[in-house]
Image 1 (tube, helix red, strand yellow):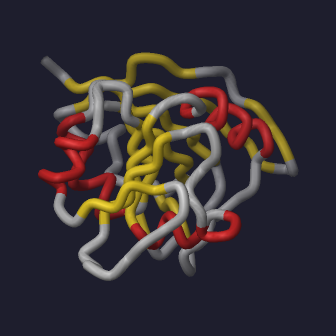
Image 2: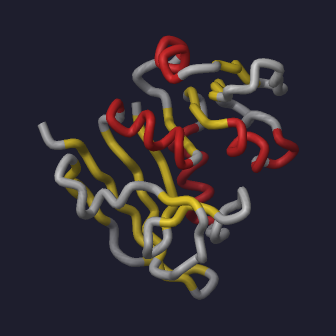
Length: 159
């Protein structure tokens, strides 16, 4: 299992159920890494996607406590245990905050886009740069798009 996330300088991931920034390079990277695989997300993340539908060319698992929830192109699960049973080793955790926190211990690698700006987030990803359970494995050079500087980082759990 993997996680993929874009964070601001405070490890913020969203505000008002939306992304903090729009970086086409990051969205292309997200697509190339997750396409053809299973993605695991919470209901609010699903609702924030275009049309509130699952992502095309992916198997979508949505974790929600709402028993009456249904969504096009999605498998609905109601507990983390049920999500684990439905997932496979190539599943990508794509948010939101509570889903990341629940499944981070099961991830073998976390793909982070670090944006050097404050997006005024109201939801956050755990700061892996100071977490003793994780170490930085790879880091790209800094890039710039739309006046924003960002880089790709990959974290792996310590043995």
